[in-house]
Amino acid sequence: MMTALPRPLTPVCLPIGSDADLARVRQHVRQAATELGFGLVQQTKLVTAASELARNTLVHGGGGRAEITPLDEGHRTGLRLSFVDHGPGIRDVALAMTDGYTTGGGLGLGLSGAQRLVHEFAIDTGPGRGTTVTAVAWVSGVPAPRSRAGARRPGAG
Image 1 (cartoon, rainbow, N blue to C red):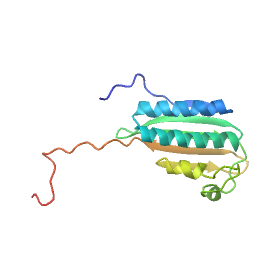
Image 2: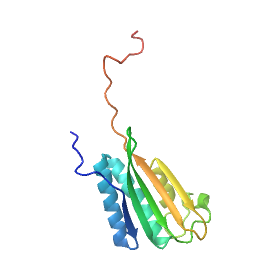
Image 3: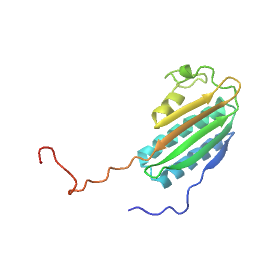
Image 4: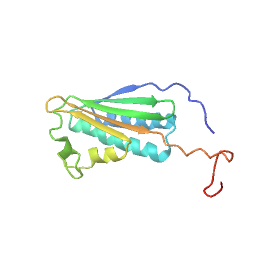
């Protein structure tokens, strides 16, 4: 059963400067994803991607902000997550996107792992000018049942 959203979703900008802020970003992403109709698996993927990207913003970018923006293109609904910092930037994006590459002692799956969890992914960065990582996910619902009147089965006609 579909219920109307209690209020229109609006973009949210959250600071990232501490571990507590990371938790707040995850909470807002989960809430927005739920309200937009993302399924539980999609919500988990989005929250995981947001957590990785927010942590990178804090650890590698020295802090910054998360922009959580609902998307409505009429025929599809989604969520855009942008993580912006004014840190040192990423010198070699291709290398940073390689599984196993790390500058922080982790597993090296943050950027590449986040990319695999969303539909669209972009990095805008450069040495000395900071980094903006944008991830977009679209709600993928269950396909609508076909109408019998309009459906044709192979070999039926």
